[in-house]
Length: 157
Image (cartoon, rainbow, N blue to C red):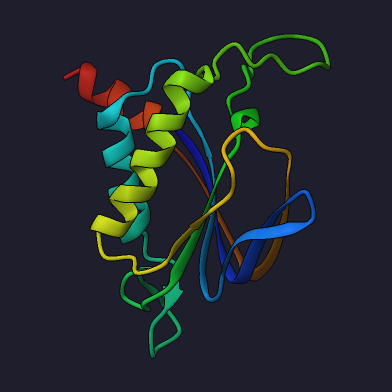
């Protein structure tokens, strides 16, 4: 799974002109599911995101997680994160992106895991829809995460 995690003051997503999900202070997560992903990657990434220390403490150090600050999360499915970087040319290849029948249950599970891990408000977009996302970044703080790095290391042990 691939995620772009942005610390936000607020974020919202619209489908056909109507707001379908919005949050205040917290995170906006663009989530891509690859053909190699399953429940293990989903659960691992949700745990990492919830514990990612990218909010400032009293000493202005990035030392607090979204859970620590009682922040909210907007999670948006985004298959375009699953491009193959090694391909040549200018047109991205999305062969790594999971088909909807694989990706949607993992996206839904990811959102449920965030809630189970203590995030009170997890807003979402509409899976597969053409969405307009508004992000008011805070910092800016943006982190790119990829479960391949963790699971490839684990398989080499």
